[in-house]
Length: 274
Image (cartoon, rainbow, N blue to C red; front, side, top):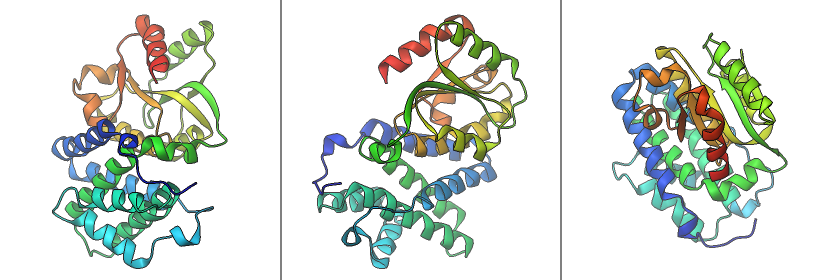
């Protein structure tokens, strides 16, 4: 990718703020072990984004990674943002920003966490900052992530651990009768579901959950899918909506489908709006 200065208009401030709000809300409403699981998810999903075609001159030095980690751990909330945007303005290719700087920082944070060099609070704040940065850069990192995936209208997925399959089966059947070519994922664990979702470029991904205790796995799933599907519209459906009126902010989704009667028209609107 050619070296170009960072266009401020390419930075998605709305998604940046949404990601920031999501992490802050999760820290307030979820138990510590659930928040720890979310931080681990961000670290491992970003840490293994390895560079392939990044030019040697664009690769960060160990000092660069240390500086970025220091910025992520800094009390100054915008320090990491300024570091990344400064590197982009200096001409560092976006592939290197995402695959080398962000991934390298995630690996280093994971190592520091495992070695007890940083606290749970430190790593949670740092992971929240990393996540909001990649959400802000979603439009510029998306082409590299989604390259060679065929575009598909939608995927319906049952949140891992959920056992109520009737609703998603009925919804899938209705959509297919309406002429939609959609994929349905049922009975998969978290990693299998994310791996399956990575095979196509879905315009919308509908995550279905009924039980109240599905909040943590649903939130973790949204984080993982956001990293592998930067532009997909994420929709929550199922009885879980009855228990959590603030669910979109908490799990970081874009929309909800409350009933099967209006599902087709609502999802059509979502996809046309993507």
